[in-house]
Image (cartoon, rainbow, N blue to C red; front, side, top):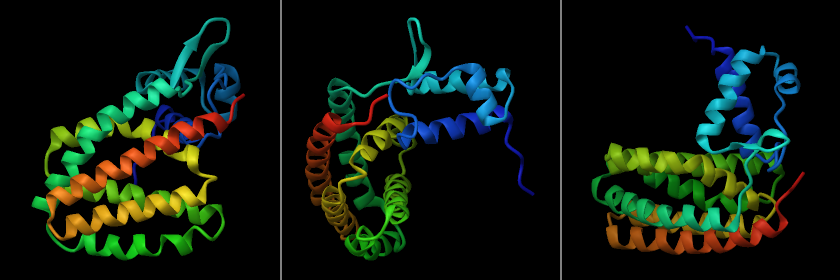
Length: 220
């Protein structure tokens, strides 16, 4: 039997998804009265949700405006990728050594189909983002290092938000799918060095794309 979410959890999840998807772009004001009414919750659970989003780094206080959606600067992106490079390369290396089963063979087939998927409409692109999330989970599971996974999870909320900057660039998404495919194939082949190197190449290209995308990011 499913357990109903608390009002604060529901508000947190809705606001988090809207921020990540850029439905609430940087600088959006999150007034308590307006957001509580919009989400159908009282102000107390809304405050709890906003406190969690602030702890996540997605919301910040701004003088004269109250709480607003945090911006994403070039410096922020570079800092995230500095940490991401070390963590994801090591996770891919460990996954290549320790993985079991055929999950990476299945991911191989799915990433091969991405170019055709991206020729469709926006819902298909959301399916691609879901595939990338499943890839991340597969690498996490295969790496079998809970400390490494916890560190990666601390970054991923922000990384997904940065990744979605490229949502209107199917050329980059298709290229990224090819880069993911090489990582998947290296892991499936238990080639740890290639898996780490392919991850390095992917993250270099992802960083360049993210920096370019900040020039065209939506603003309030």
